[in-house]
Length: 317
Image (cartoon, rainbow, N blue to C red; front, top):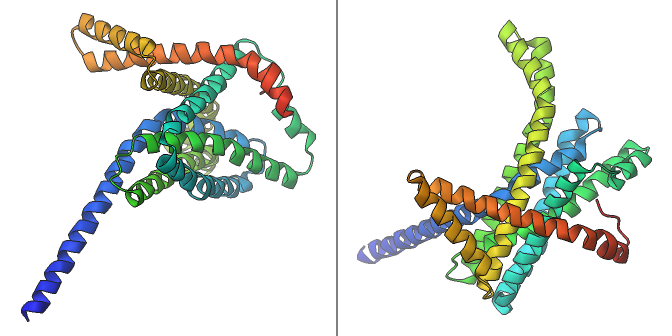
């Protein structure tokens, strides 16, 4: 009997340890996931364009296809590759993060440049040249998954760099949980966004009260403004996150002047304000990182469009 009680006690201890590990994985995943807010916002802002102009009945199936592609990118390709890199060449994590930061700066600056100086978008022209809706859908899904791969690589690398993993399997579990959670958040939000106008049309036509029908009309009218706002927020987030990754990466590599300068400026502004110091310090830091990201991105535009683009056979967007 005592042996059975001892066994049950051991089982209970193992269960408690397992539960604690699950809690630790979840906590680490949440902590790491919070670091990718800027990239997540941009991902959610970018994705709705891939269903624009297609049959409304195909919107959710297309988003589901992109979601599955995103999970494949994160869990099958990026997770093992990054874990191997972290195990055998951890010194490459910071340069990879900075490469992703350069990409974010370029994308954000290109959007700002396009808004200030509108020009033809070759991707739009390609869409117009595709007459068959089925082929257009396939092309859109492939394009979305390719874009997602780049953003997912940045997301997973940021998560990995913020995970405090005592062993390989803990790190793998945390990375997987955070990757799945971020994917569900992004594409769940996208699904809500793209179907919001349909919900508004239904309410406007079938609402039982005047207030309900008015709310439906309001949803329909608000959608273009919401999408535009998301685009602006996504662009700002890209520049902020991209700039922050570059300054932090330079600091890690031993070039601390920019990072320290922004830190001292933010501290000075917070001390001068005398209240809400944390908020002001964050806002000044984000603003400086965003300005740096914009400057770097604008400098990269001619490099990408005139050198990298022709070499890879792809036009800039």
